[in-house]
Length: 261
Image (cartoon, rainbow, N blue to C red):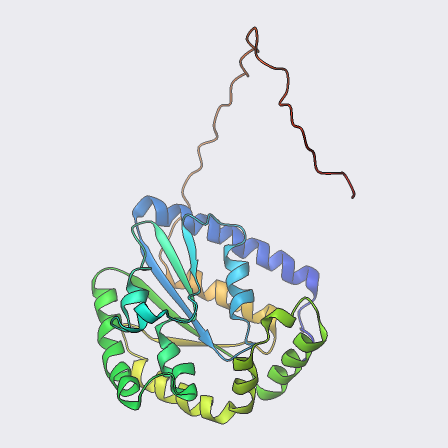
């Protein structure tokens, strides 16, 4: 599917309503001190970044925090594997969105040989216990796997090549993932089977249609977190104080950006 079946105007209207609900959610999370972790995994081009962008574009970055970690440093490689993720866990009143997560070990690290077979197998055994510990400590943990079919993935890769605004998204790792579709399929299957637990289940999102998948994801996310609308007390701004004697009438600058547009 190269084009969404959902008209743009209808999509924008539905998205705005869901974003209003996200604003209500953040007020509730802040007031009640909830701690929420949302993991976004999936195939390349499946739309993880775009979905996260729609979730956070109307809310406070002090409450909704996005974590997209680069490759580990030499120091981080010498630490416990999960250590660099634990430090990003939320405090009370925070929602952390992981744009890829500790599951790198079960995907790209396994396929590209960035970890040993022993490290990979150890991860699959230990990750359910790690996530159980998070949930038992009071964190609401939600895991999404964004899935896209081969034909749509290829179309999106080609679009990145031809579009200067998307070329930055392409990396040598993307080319490898394109070629190794079935290796990733096998790795993701093993990952899901090992870590899809009652306390921390996986939710698949069909992302062949990006507009619908974004709406479905946000709607589902809202359904998993108990929240109520917090009454907003309208402030009384009062009147501005009068300028005191000696105070400047305006701020003076030596340089101003030209009004080109």
